[in-house]
Image (cartoon, rainbow, N blue to C red; front, top):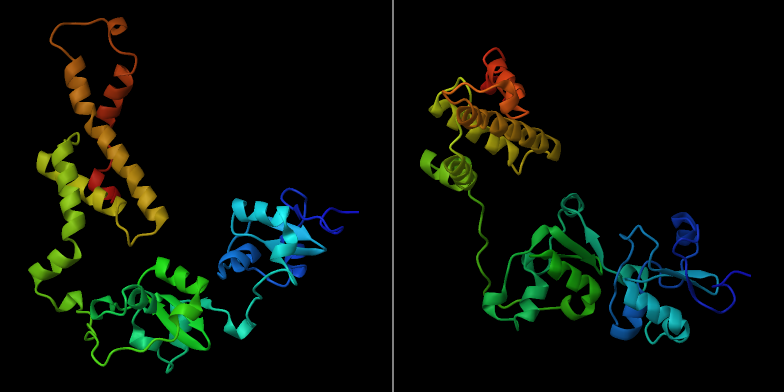
Length: 303
C-alpha cells in the first residue's frame, strides 16, 4: 500500500509522480493551499508553481502547499486541513478571484474597471482617505464576482487575491482625483523630448565614458568616445531583447579590451632593447592583435 492512501499524509517530492497525475487527483481545494485557508482564511493560489516540492498526498488526493512550513504542518496533522476538519471551505469557482492580462481586460470592453480604475487595496489600507486614491494599472488586473479591479502594484494585487472579500465592495467619495491623460513624447519640443525620453541612459553612458576615457587603436579620441557611448546605449537599452543586449555587451567588452592595448603596449615597449625572453608571455599576441586592428573594419561598422 502506498503512503498517503492509508490514512497517513506524505510528501510526493521525488516519488516519480507526474504533474498530470497530480492535476487529475487534486483534492477539494484544487490549487489553493489548504493550510493558508484553515489558519488565516487566505486564498493562496499555487497553480503557478510548477515544482511538486510542496505537494502532499492524503487519502488518495493531492494537496498543494505554498511553502515548506505549511507542508510540515499539513503532514503532521492533515485532518485539520481537509474536510470535514477544515474550518473554512473553498468558495465556489465563480467566487474565486483570478488574474487578468491586459489583453483580457481590453477584450472585456465595454465593461469598465470598478472604482473607476482606482486601487481598492491602497484605498482601504490608507483608511479611505482622499490621498489614498491611487490609479491602478491594467497589468495588475483581477476578476472577482464578474467585476474587474485594477491595482497599482503586484503586492496589492496579491493582497487582494488572498482576501478579496475585504476589499471588493467599497464606495468612492464624491470627489476623486482627476484622470491624468498621458502626454505623448512626440508632442514635446526637441529639448523636452530628449530630457524625458533619453536623458537618463545618455547620462549613464556619458558617465561611463568619462570614467574609462577610451582610446581605440587607429581612431581619434573623439570617435573612440562616440563609439563607446553607442555600444553602451545598445548594450543597456531596456527596450531591446535580452539577446540583443547580451550581443552588444560582448561587443562593448571587446571594445574595452582593444582600448586597453594602447596603454599596455606603451608600458612594455620601452626605448631600451629587451630580449623576447624578457617580455611578457602575451606581449607578442597583443602586439599582433593591435596591428591587425588597422586592417579590420572600423568599430563603427559593426554597430
